[in-house]
Amino acid sequence: MTEDSFHFLQDSLTPRRIVEELDKYIIGQDNAKRSVAIALRNRWRRQNVPESLRDEIMPNNIILIGPTGVGKTEIARRLSKLAGAPFIKVEASKFTEVGYVGRDVESMIRDLVEIAVNQVRAEKTVEVQERAGDLAEERILDIIFPQPQGQSTGEEGEEAVQSQTREKLREQLRAGNLDKRMVEIDTTVSSSSNMQVFGPMGLEDMGVDIQNLLSNMIPKKKKRRKVSIAEARELLRQEEAQKLIDPDAVSRLALERVQNAGIVFLDEIDKIAGSKNTGSGVDVSREGVQRDLLPIVEGSSVNTKYGVVRTDHILFIASGAFHVSKPSDLIPEMQGRFPIRVELDSLTEEDFVKILTTPKNALLKQYSAMLEAEGVELTFEDAAIGEIARIAAEVNDRVENIGARRLHTILTTLLDQILFDVPDVITERRVNITPELVEKKLASIVKDRDLSQYIL
Ligand SMILES: Nc1ncnc2c1ncn2[C@@H]1O[C@H](COP(=O)(O)OP(=O)(O)OP(=O)(O)O)[C@@H](O)[C@H]1O
Ligand SMILES: [Mg+2]
Image (spheres, helix red, strand yellow):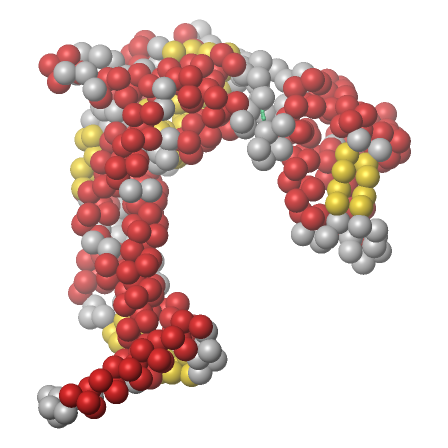
């Protein structure tokens, strides 16, 4: 993605478009989809408001409330994907753990920047691929057909012959005819690039990049290697691509993306919402975490090794089951920063049928695709799908409601034998799943509560 297309994408993501896209992956949860669409668009709107008013508009963060396995994380993840936005998921509860110190909260922003840097670098690498390929080709030609050193002899004829031969070799090279030939190439290896450096705590906080500091101090080494031309082309292409990418530009773009498009998913936010009336020591630390989170959510500057990031426009999507605590148990300032609340629904048997079949990445499609890799066509009769959904709902009801995750465990149990027997024992080209088979494989397990606790 180029920067232009990135910005164009942001402009074109209207709330309705967003919901349309989310519909391709997530069944039901219409309210949640609507709300995240509004939250994302509100960020864009806020960024496009005249500066004098912009700071007055509070960030429109959102809390998704709902039981486990109903699509909270999935919605946030899809949202970020379709927006091409840097995304990070953090468990809010981890900040209450022993040994936690205030600055750790900022680490999520640093991690987000790291994700954005990788994202931008990958995009830039794609952009320079062609040019890098050309340069690699020239380097290989230089190796297998070195240019005559020094001044030309002045004989025009000879030069023409030289360049003709080079072009012929180029053709051979492109056709892959020389791929197996061995050549010696020099690749640049930075001696510290494979070395993970942990600096003293605190330096990282000030935005000091120790890794980079060290690798700049240690001179780059040339390493001579003997490889096939096919390998050489790949190695040299990567090397040339790295040379074509300006690391400063990558950092700059990555910071910009985090600031303008970043999404932080704060999972288990309910675990840091202490209920007021217990008054135990635990609540103090929960409230402490909220107080630490507050400046980041409100908008502050965080130092990273790539530069300073403002968090004002980062979108925070919080999520939690809120079985014990309620959003109103959060400190008032926090509540104010998460004005959009939405409850997700428990999933029904009908939802399960759709989840199994309709999303682009539907589970049944995944299994069919895996078996297709073996040359086997895996089909599910409608009645069989209905039966799977019914069993999933029943086990959720009787054992524990884990939402759509139940479908995963049921399918692995159902398909276990087939997945084991293809292709050695099952040699048919087609495997059809009938309701009888579902019944046979699963009924006895479902009936036995103890058994289903372990297996399904
Ligand atoms: N509404 C849905 N439509 C399609 N797939 C869904 C839906 N809900 C859940 N799934 C699938 O179930 C799995 C778990 O969902 P997800 O991770 O979103 O749960 P969650 O709501 O975040 O739960 P938790 O509170 O435990 O984190 C995912 O693989 C997802 O694809
Ligand atoms: Mg989740």
